[in-house]
Amino acid sequence: ENNYKSAFTCINAPSNALTFNTGYHIEHHEEPGLPWFKLPELFLKNIKKHAENDSLTFSGIGSMEVGTLVLNGKFDELADHYINIGQPQRTKEELIAEFKRRLTPVVHSHVATE
Image (tube, rainbow, N blue to C red; front, side, top):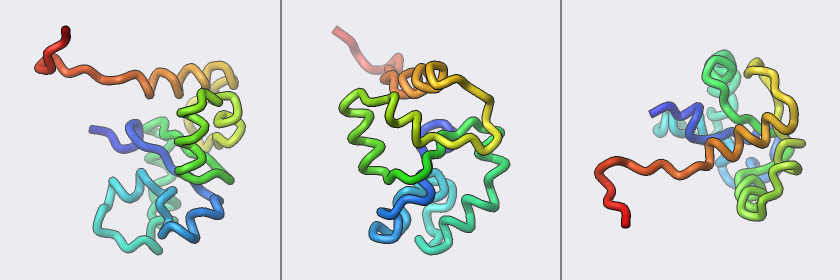
């Protein structure tokens, strides 16, 4: 499992100060035992890994806002908060397509379907 592709990070989000840095979600998954106040440092330390693994990083928006935008299908607005820190360059349309691709449910072969 690749935490950089299955989660996202929110930086410069006012809600991080109120929620023990929950916006640093990838960092939390990378080092779950790390104290909340060290998560921003881990983000900066691992910024190259974010780029190499094509992570989704948003600025000025918190985790709850990301969820709300996704649930309401407002990918265009979500794309306005995306920041490129070395990931592949994408147009806004390509970025929205990538959001939707990553949100596609994963069905495991051992799960029965009807």
